[in-house]
Length: 377
Image (cartoon, rainbow, N blue to C red; front, side):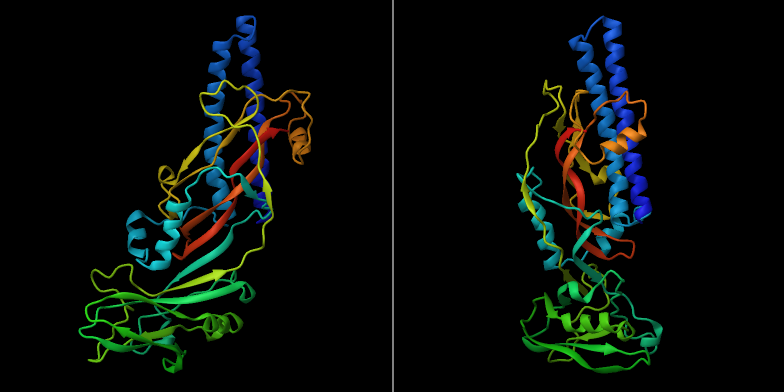
């Protein structure tokens, strides 16, 4: 993975160098054809250059997201599949509500983020059917939660199993029970039990703490054959939704796992900001909104769009080259005719809720996706 990241970085650097060369050539041609730097021609060429930079920035963002999520290509998940898989559950709605409350305005305080890959904060594991060895005559149909090597017991802060309860015919005292499946098709003693006072005619989501269960699975992966869930009311009806009947799409059990992340240092941000109508010719940060629906990426649940920003403008040749990648730019452009380039000097992450290729819902932090400051290097 390190090689692919270095390769991507080199491609982005070379693209920036080509843009600098094009900008220099355009400015030179304009001056030669007019005998001097005419304002109208310069404004037109600057506009064209910004369009090229924006197009390259959007293409780079596509590659960056896939690279940082360690994906070779975007998951093939259509909008219809997303609607079927997306749980209609409180924790997911809380995450979606964060985007409505927080918005995506530019921030004054940003975090230093040296990690080049996504930092996962919450994972929602969708229930799947257990292996045949843990079933008897194809039963039970639920629930296996597949764990990937990225899970580390030391990072698990909590784990909640969410189960949707159908409406009861009458008021009942119901025990939501979880039993462990075994490879011989039998079930061990109950792992957890939760008493619920259920009101007649009221469906609801219920959660039960399964951090200890998850910890055992992480320490002893061979014990994870899945669990059986039931919740019988007074008349013997199982209220737990473990197989979706018509109209119950998005109501299957899932596990919400919260993971810790490394602490981040905070610092003040500053820089020159412009808009598309600004007369500023110096290196400046300009607004750019990325719309994932335009990409055809329905697998990203939220945000559907975000402010990425981009850098554009002139850099004087005498500008001090004080950034680490300047040497790399110089080596990639031995002719030295591009001069200093207007590039991001500070970037910050975005939070993203998305499906991975295993159709698990991930809530994670994607580093270096927002341009916070631009400068010459």
